[in-house]
Length: 564
Ligand SMILES: NC(=O)C1=CN([C@@H]2O[C@H](COP(=O)(O)OP(=O)(O)OC[C@H]3O[C@@H](n4cnc5c(N)ncnc54)[C@H](OP(=O)(O)O)[C@@H]3O)[C@@H](O)[C@H]2O)C=CC1
Ligand SMILES: CC(=O)C(=O)O
Ligand SMILES: [Mg+2]
Image (tube, rainbow, N blue to C red; front, side, top):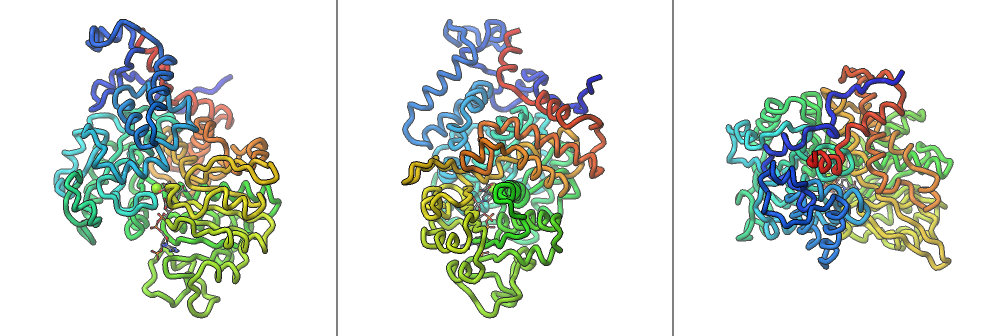
């Protein structure tokens, strides 16, 4: 007897046009693929030429148009226009060409788009800007978005990728993340909401830009900042009690506090701390499989002790503890370097609280250079989350390789312009022997001996769509640590022997939908086990994955529905 779906939400069956007519942007228009019936129903009759095509033709047309633009930013602008014109054609195009389009709607191009957001914006609604001037009225402002939202990605623009404070221009990030929630995670476009909390910017450049779209004032600080965020979260809980909130690219003076405050109050997680942690921990699991060496034997040098660095280390520590180390023993296998050098207890006080658990107690005096730390530690893993381009020089990487036959070299900073090294540098410096992963994508590298190695992308995009889908489908009241750990295991299991043969320890981006379904199923099951969901998951893993897949939004189904 086959099980019935435990999920009450199904984006694949969602009456999209009923939703779409309430959307501020046009989610219903399928361009020339609109059928005669839907043209009449939508009163677009006569506004379109005679040819009634199909989704396939419109995807081909969109691709040809996109490719006719020269620069990635021009392509980004074209794709944004397409998304606003027809989400069906946009998502069908993205899904059919993920490897080509992801770098355009996500890192690295989204970084440039955020930097130039004020210059390139068409001014149409793409999400909500909640500003400091909305204080006392935020709940009312949320009513401007009158849709049953299931997933919100929110930023305050204070640390956008490795590019710093981009103020209201940070809006590009929630938009980009949510495009992956839809394409990779299978959320319905109309169930997603990008939000930027515009509480000012400290970027002098933006404040002086006459085209700047944000609030022209310095950032609100201290208690006033937390009070504004609190009003926002209270308003969200009131308007969309079931919605999952993903905190994105908040600077590290706030992001840990916000997560601690809200994680038990509503379903939410911080993508940079927890999402990145899950993806890189999965990379360590796969590396252990490849190398035949337990995770707990790694000696890890981390350049960058911010939200992502500490989030990644915490998740790897939990894996080491599962292998039998104590937390203290596990933490002792990490050497963090920040902008002032090796993080050592007693130096550079007061120390930000997120660094304290990793501060070395066994080192006297300051050690300021990466090379000195490598010489001291002889690491097996070198991880970059520092926003410092090119600091993993060939010499640095060779010195790691000199003491470790197959080191992990992970330059994870985004976008590409901030990457600590390129794939070519890492592979060349280690004679192709390192296990490599980068935050932004790199092309395959052919070495002098003719071997071609395909780099993996160590980016949180592998997990956040699945964590989100699993949480929403399970109607989980919070996102537990167990649910994040379930994502680690599920992602690691998605890496195939074919991936490893190509030289990468992450799966193909083209497989992201099925990966998200597997992660979603694992996260939903874990939500039940952790007591934060009461759906019935009394079925096999395969059945649960199938139900997640069946719940996912599929652009062509929307088109064919409109043909009825
Ligand atoms: N691949 C992925 O999926 C992800 C990648 N990232 C990327 O990671 C990077 C960092 O993000 P995040 O941790 O949130 O940022 P943070 O601002 O929280 O942390 C940055 C860290 O880098 C340190 N740093 C700055 N300059 C130097 C330097 N010259 N040498 C050594 N360390 C330095 C900072 O030091 P100090 O503490 O002294 O200021 C800080 O500890 C970004 O580029 C981001 O795009 C982030 C999330 C996910
Ligand atoms: C990928 C991501 O979340 C970041 O670079 O901030
Ligand atoms: Mg981020």
